[in-house]
Image (cartoon, rainbow, N blue to C red; front, side, top):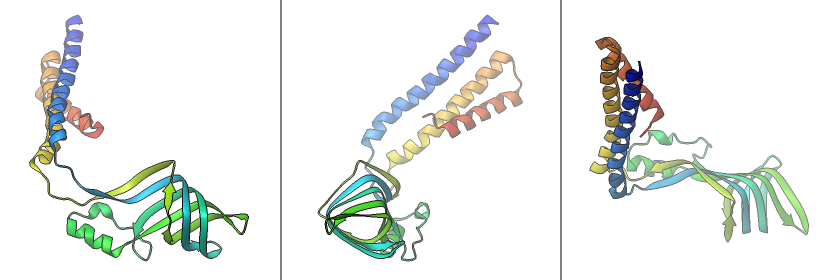
Length: 210
C-alpha cells in the first residue's frame, strides 16, 4: 500500500508540473500579444466629489438643476443605455461595426445616491438623482469599478488564438496523464480510466486552473 501512496503523490506532483510547464509557455506569449482595445460602458464609483459642477436631471421630487462649487456623492453609477433606459446586451456584439452602431444609438447616464451640495448658504441633500446632462471642472473618487466593458478591436492575432488553445490543451494532457496513471496504479478497467480522465478535465475546465 505504501508504494501506491507514493505513486499517487508522484502522479499529483507530475500533474502540477505539467500545468506549470504550460503556464511557463504562456508567459512570453502574453507579453508579446498585440494589445486589444476596450471601452468601459458601465462603471460604479464611491465617495465622488465634483468641483464647479452643474447637474441636470430628475429626482423623486421632480426635475432638478444643481449648480455648485462642490457636490459630494456617496455612490455613482455611470452607464450607457438607449433613450428608453434599456441597457444594450453588450455580450451579443461580435463586430466593431455592431459596437459603433450601439454606441451611436445610446447615451451616457449617471445615477447618483446621497447627493449633497451648498446652495444659498445652506446644505441641501437628495437621496437619489438621475443625471441626464452635466459639466464639471474636476472630479475625484475613492474607488471605481468597471462593471462592463466592450472590445473595440476584433482582429484576433495568432498569438491570441494560441493562448485560447493552450489552457484546454494543458487540461486535456493532465486529464489523460491521470487517466493512464489511475489505470496502472489501480489496475482499473478502460471505462473507469476514461471516466476518471473525463471528470478530471471537467473539473479543470470549471475551475480554470491555468
